[in-house]
Length: 319
Image (cartoon, rainbow, N blue to C red; front, side):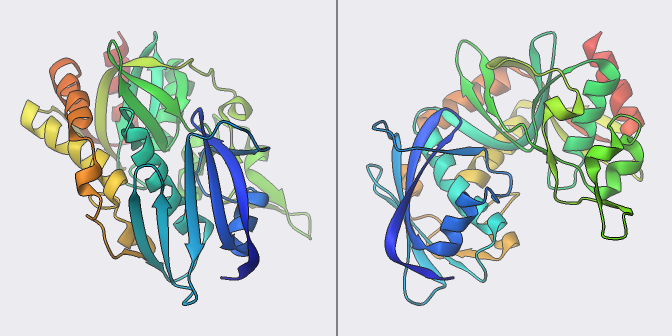
């Protein structure tokens, strides 16, 4: 990490809210300037008088520990990272943004989503569970509308709804064999010096580039699916009971807010020295309102299958 001689401020938007980040680290600052942030739905903007939240990420002299404070909420995050990469920075910053959203009843989920006849179908799963593969396949084969990939937020309005989503789509090389008939392969390749085509593992595509119809948010949620798509899976679909629904959704929400659960920060080489220091700041009443509305009005399914079985299942759901 390289510290700036003076602090710099960056103003950006994320899901219809405006944030101002102050930092003394030029590596972090350059990540914003070069737009090299991994899976973070932000857009840098010029200074504005309206700021929803101010964020300080001021590094100390040890170059490994720093405090991330969100003022007004008086919450302090203390982390240690082996290397400040675009991905580790994304995890740390997005945790704070997700916490801020939770104070107004909006909750981030590590999920993808599609819409059919103006009803959202939310796909939740671990990294490499097949969320992107399945959501793209449903849109291409069943004429569904695209909502979001990897990150979205839900809120309790008249009905539990998807209110924001991340549009950029990163496609892994392992899924190319299945998707190459659905996506223009030239979008996924780069030319090397010898003019041979190589797979671009880092390129992000938008729904528009892929030719998907984009849904308009917010959209009420029709169903939630905890998925694992694999060619070795035995095909099964189970509708989950109320207690299981509550436990799974609570874990997903707290996984983002606290950096624990199914997607812990520790998996990405980030050690949070005070993971529960702001537990009493979480508005559990708002979380419980979302969960209670979900488990009473929205069916949850556990889907373990290969991609062909999963598509057939969703075709039945849509009829």
